[in-house]
Length: 62
Image (cartoon, rainbow, N blue to C red; front, side, top):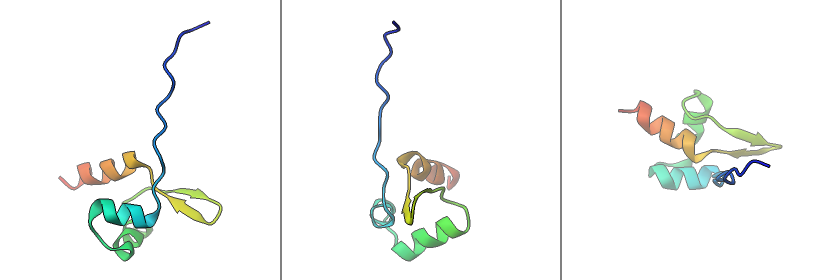
């Protein structure tokens, strides 16, 4: 049996948490999602964002 480390599971953020993280409005988050600048995970009607995708957005802004 291989001895692998357990994967790190990072929580998915809702639009409100993303807005707080980026210090922008929820409407701005919605615009970033709509124009494809911010990738999302859709779970039924819920929209969630991975921390990695927020970091990628910020890296692209440099």
